[in-house]
Image (cartoon, rainbow, N blue to C red):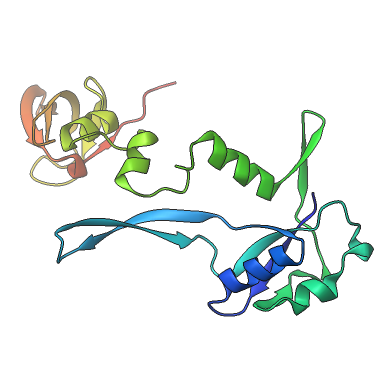
Length: 201
């Protein structure tokens, strides 16, 4: 496959994609799922959007650069231009792997397929799938700050003191033992008030 980047007219991505496919070209555009708070329904509503507005990846197959009907591509309604260098269309670079050549576009497609399309999913469902967050605040805090790990308190009355995490409360607050004036003192702090201390190699 030979992938090129097409820039579309404003708000013409769908039209350009449809016409390019009718002309016999393969197209690809990554999408992203995200959530937006709906006040009237008092809940998050899932939406989708193009990750790269006004741009499409177009596959010209096995055609050589000089054999590709660029005039046909440019004439497709919705297409503004084909990106290139010095007025000449330029293909996306390919990388060698296992004796096969993979373009950046195919790598994106493979990642999305392998991750059940959660790679570009910024919803709670997607973040849970990637284990970026937990099912609740307590679980999320435990994932970020495992019990036994060392942190430095960076705000509040105990700022600049080092501490060790001993527990996480049901509200997601950290219970730590801070070394204050040479003595271990139990302190409750918010996760936003600490930062991890890198362990020695």
